[in-house]
Length: 293
Image (cartoon, rainbow, N blue to C red; front, side, top):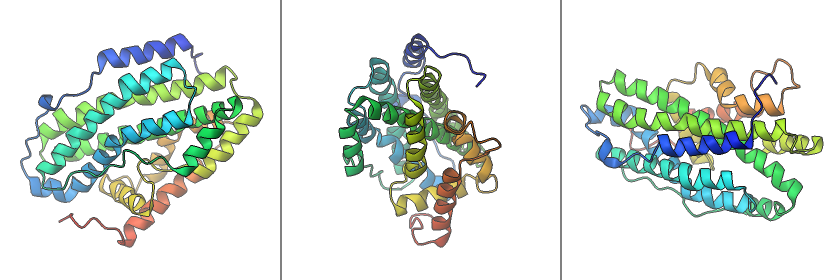
């Protein structure tokens, strides 16, 4: 694959550096001054709401992880318990406070529901072969999620500057954006470690391909309403014209590790289909955000 060999020591060191270099962002460190609140609300209020909800659902994500990976190793536990969860929680709290400043209601995250499908897979994950497949899927999902976040915050920062909202761009969006690449790197390195060290047998990698193709979902989009909201987010952040390129970026890790044998694959078809479906729902107007003005 032309990639440097990932070691367990490198993974532990990466998590340690993330914790040291990127403590959770305090609410007192941000400047929520908004010069033209009605314009920000109209163009990006629904985007901020979506991102706030997703970040605040980290508590449910941890419950899902505890269910899916009952035998998670210490490095994974340190990452999601001591680094990722505290950082993401603060992202959500800051964004939620910002959207309330703009006159939107507080976010309504689901922090407790663990689906029946995840519970079943978690029960099977007590079997070591299943556990390792689930672990790889966890890393792939995390990588796609964090890459999506990096791209979204980058576009939102640019949009805020275009509106002249430099305080929000610099002290809120950019601060959050700086923490997301480290999360992406952890998932990417962890998945690469599993493949490089042949933790999975060929049949397990094949099973991971099948399950990934069938279970791929966009971050925070767990039902039709939320998929439509994701489509609205993609539209508002001007990602529609370059949709294949966007899909290419969020699928970079799974293309490398699951689909390397598919020469010329630019985007796994299931990734592009999920995005197309979300945009179709958004364009239908059936679930349009009633608060947008």
